[in-house]
Image 1 (tube, rainbow, N blue to C red):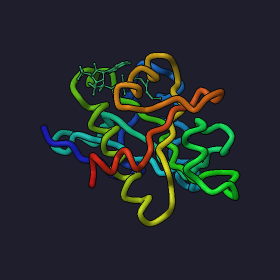
Image 2: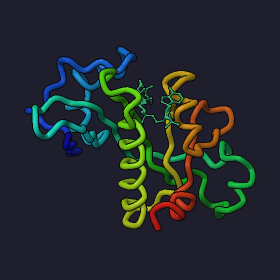
Image 3: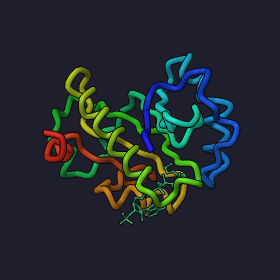
Length: 168
Ligand SMILES: CC(C)(COP(=O)(O)OP(=O)(O)OC[C@H]1O[C@@H](n2cnc3c(N)ncnc32)[C@H](O)[C@@H]1OP(=O)(O)O)[C@@H](O)C(=O)NCCC(=O)NCCS
């Protein structure tokens, strides 16, 4: 089966989408297009190119920042004190339709989102990808890929310089 990831557009079929979390399902169906139009987020969807335009999974990316005082102390010391907020990239949402769970699609989309963010950080500064896991399971998923906690925020981050070892 061939998969294609591209920017969300009007002809992508979303009505069937169920990832196990209704907030994320509703986001894709009702909010994502509006947020894209308002440039709050870029939304990438993965479809099966051969059969239909049905969305199998999606993720969103936005510019973001981390308050310096929330970074772990060893990270704070890496950056000039004049930076009260440190530029970062937000992986706001990531979800896969339940019919594809456990087949590697979540990992594929996560790596793709990280690679896209890594490349973008060469053009617009960003020290890390930040995620805000929707529940404990999502947090466990991100931990598998090396994300670390941002203390007192519920968020996790993965440094671009760590990804450098992966993506060069
Ligand atoms: C989390 C989610 C994206 C994973 O997608 P998936 O396609 O089932 O994941 P994959 O098949 O690519 O799994 C990749 C690895 O992560 C593990 N994994 C998957 N879901 C996990 C979870 N919730 N907790 C911990 N590990 C998980 C898998 O076991 C696999 O590891 P393995 O290769 O050692 O077996 C999917 O379950 C989902 O859409 N959940 C609802 C929405 C959500 O929680 N999104 C997270 C961000 S807000």
